[in-house]
Amino acid sequence: MESQMRNISRRSLVKGSLAAIMTGAAISRTAFAQSSEPVMLGVSGPLTGPNAQYGAQWKQGFDLALDEIHAAGGINGRKLAYTFEDSQSDPRQSVAIAQKFVSDPKIVMELGDFSSPASMAASPIYQRAGLVQFGFTNSHPDFTKGGDFMWSTSVSQADEQPLLARYAVTHLGLKKLAILHLNTDWGRTSRDHFASAAKEFGAEVVISEGYIPDERDFRSTLVRARDANPDGLILISYYSDGALIARQARQAGLKQKICAASSVYSPKFLELGGEAVEDVHLGTRYFPNDPRPEVQKFVSGFKAKYNGQEPDAFNAYSYDAMNVAAAVVRIGGTDRRAVRDAFTKVRDVSTVVFGPATFDVASRRVKGAMNTELVIRKGQFTLWDGKPT
Image 1: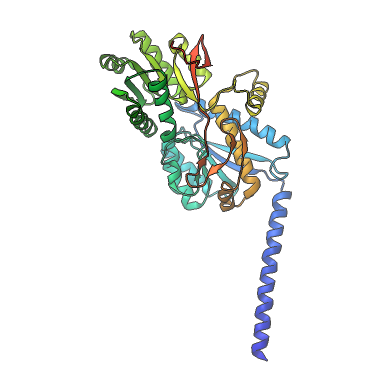
Image 2: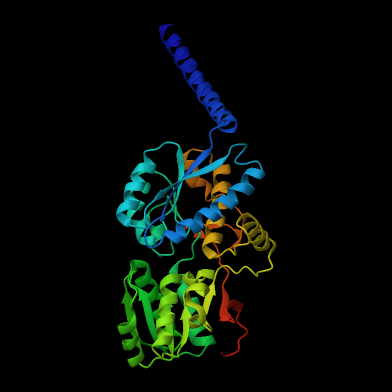
């Protein structure tokens, strides 16, 4: 009898526990839907320092996306919000920010950092804590190898740089190349992938020169490039340093064709480069004249919100990132592990850069990417028509 009573009590306890768990889960779901608190994302990126302009562009894209997300009902009735911590894209600061975010239970996902080195320095902290690090501009091939909490909508340089090499060598007919690249982990990795692909296409890299991110005088570098007698200059740069190199190259009398990585694609490249960037060739993931409805909706919405300003690729990347984050959180809620798992479940999220976006589970990067070959003519980015310049 005593044994039977113990078994009955044990069964009652198990049933009671299961009921409590199920009731708790129901309450949790109800609380998520009914809470007036916004769902909070943490952003680590540059607001000051040499890359400050990119953080400002991120905020523009984020805020436009949030306007549209909230107009459509938010996240199951709740608002989506973000807190932006200034890392200056410095690995030391991104690590400190990561420690702050993982200890804040309100943060359900982190976005950033801008550069792959800054993100990858912080990745171990996010991985150990089980908080998704959504590096939406992190193209270093090793970024998503940091763990199963690292996800990205950025095309890996292992995929992107061969596209630029094909454009330069196969389409433009350049055979002797001088590469000028940022002397960062991203720049060196991009250089290596470009050089390998260019050789496969039949070109020779006659000189490769790195430069530090805040360098402003490229004259000695350009003299060495000139003396190597290339028929093309390859810029693995951002738009500010890329425009400055183009200016100094033309001032030094270098008339070679210039091809640049997609990272220079911005109206600022045209503004800063002036006549020196005329006839520069580049590829891009985003082009505002693309007739796809999602692109035109983004462009018109951006211009309306920001007094006619033309959006660039970094505005598009952040706009897409916020929309992807919203789609993920709608599935995963506020549980950090459920948010990670939700990246495997989202399907065909509408994006400007990728069209309908779905993630490859193995690489933890978005599947596929659009590549548009452009040339600058009459001070504007235009589709390359296949004709020599």
